[in-house]
Length: 185
Picture 1 (cartoon, rainbow, N blue to C red):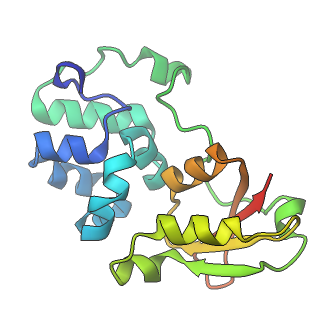
Picture 2 (picture 1 turned 120 degrees about the vertical axis):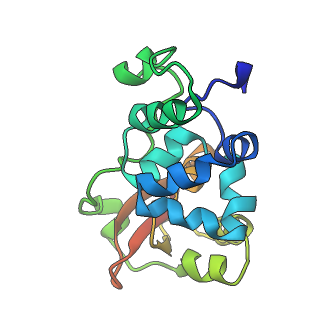
């Protein structure tokens, strides 16, 4: 972290290593942050997820989260946050809208998935889901779909899949959780 200033690009794990007392502040911001108590998520997702991505997972605006965290450690609240307000730069998570779940686009709802991976179950078993997800995605044939079922919006995972040229859409799973639909681009 540059000069220890908390920014939307600060990784969650870096934040908690530098200021362990901020864990309670994070937990108070949204129920989604309770997942940080899971040691697997703490070792994996927290190491790659930025505060902007964590805010998207929790349905918060990145600026609001950063300002709250800065206040808690006595940092200036407005320094360098103009780009976040304007939606510029690398701070905002644009790959996935943190808002309400919309209907799946036609390509993602056109057929049943070839495979379903329950991310919550993998995390509960202490397994890091990233390898399993990419293994399943690599097996997809053209026009086949992979469904990831999860109780939270896995923004860093979705962004990584998109970076590797997979299409992703988020909708409602049959069991009431989120369904992340993945297809080869």
